[in-house]
Image (cartoon, rainbow, N blue to C red):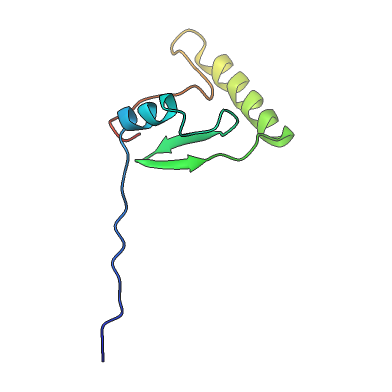
Length: 83
């Protein structure tokens, strides 16, 4: 009996590679993508419920933290080479 098991390898991307792909036009102008843990993820469209939740969360954080922290809702952040 033959072993039919296949091991799949996943290619993870770096932030630098992700930015180079965007600059090269690999992603369409209307494509919404983000890099998470080295994986390129297509994002779904923002709906009313999403926008409302983000707005309420932003207001809560801004009011709670006042001038102790700078809060930026839904802005890109680079945590390491793959995020």
